[in-house]
Image (cartoon, rainbow, N blue to C red; front, side, top):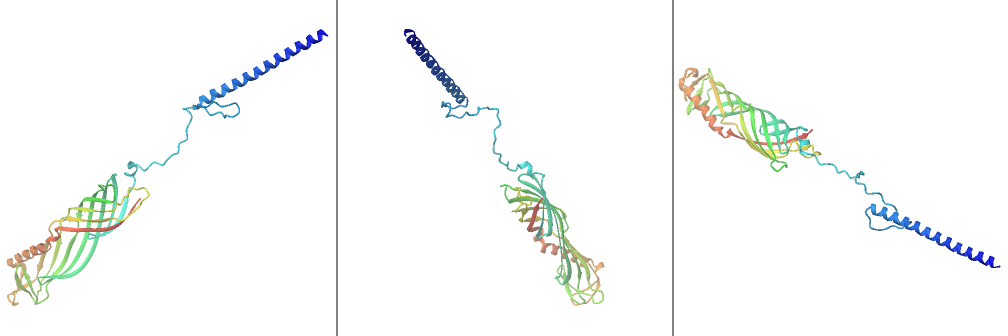
Length: 298
């Protein structure tokens, strides 16, 4: 009986020791797990300690890992505009109907070339001499366009490298009609009436200066159309009139008719008439320029 009681006491002590060891082992494992979670959380830069089942492991903060960044389209660079486009246009001006083309030099400047043409015929009379005149506009021009505010307003010094604008006319005085040259009155001969030719021309090369709104080369990449409007002046110099007459002239009473080619006084009066024509048209020395056009940028 004593042996049985001793065996039961030993078994009870052994069971107690085994139970205590098992609980200690489980507590140790939990502590290790908690420490591991805390270390993992510290690696991600957080200050919270995560429990074994309540926290989710965070990815390590690796500076070498690729980072997705939203890409924003870069605005067009000034260098992308230069030399990459050509603008062309048509226009109507006091120089005629024209075509022109432009290309950029810098972000605020262009160089522009243009050609103008126009023709018109009409008759008129001056001091009794009748003229059938043909007005011809032919010109080739170049301009340096400067946009000081990088907008549409521009200043454009230029040069008309060819000025073919001129007036050509045939002249005549009907039989028996009086006309005046150099302050002297003559009568056209009834047998050999006065006929001739006349011409008014200008300097072949002429500077100009324009200002206006519009650009054949809009700087915005999505704009292609433009409506340029310009005002300015062409410095084409004083007009140069030439008058050549032939035939026979009589005095104011229709007497003393003679061939004008041998009359020095008459020829001097022709020169005086040329000078009068030049004086009457002297305002064309500064020729106004107004133009309206339509352009497209390629």
